[in-house]
Image 1: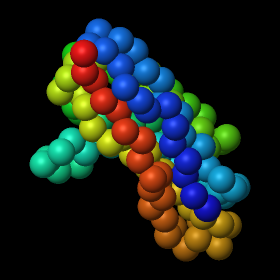
Image 2 (image 1 turned 60 degrees about the vertical axis):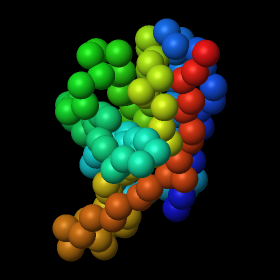
Image 3 (image 1 turned 90 degrees about the vertical axis):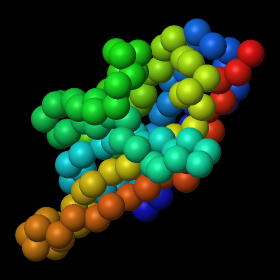
Image 4 (image 1 turned 30 degrees about the vertical axis):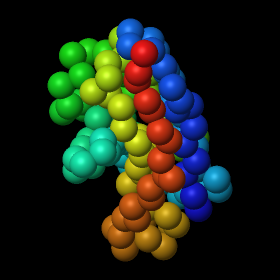
Amino acid sequence: VQLQASGGGLVQPGGSLRLSCAASASIYRVNVMSWYREAPGKQRELVASITSTGVTNSPHSAEGRFTISGDTASAMVYLQMNNLKPEDTAVYYCYFQAFSSLYDYRKRRQTDYWGQGTLVTVSS
């Protein structure tokens, strides 16, 4: 199973982008879906996450500009980014934490899935 992220690109400051991420095949049960980003010379950081019950978390101080949404049952997650700033320039990665099969679910063994990353460049 691979995660396929899309929606990145070049945008001017103040613009918007919507990132999407979907699994290439069925995953038994997705528990958490997240977006991370990695800017040049910086560590990868969590941008936002959403659980199977719809609880969202945005530890990154995006000042309410970013909104995560999605559906763990269909294994699709989105990140709406508004009023983008140059400091938002980074490679954005989607991440799923999931039980890959019924066997793993019964063993309570989760798998980490990472997307390939999509580049967001905010520049005039």
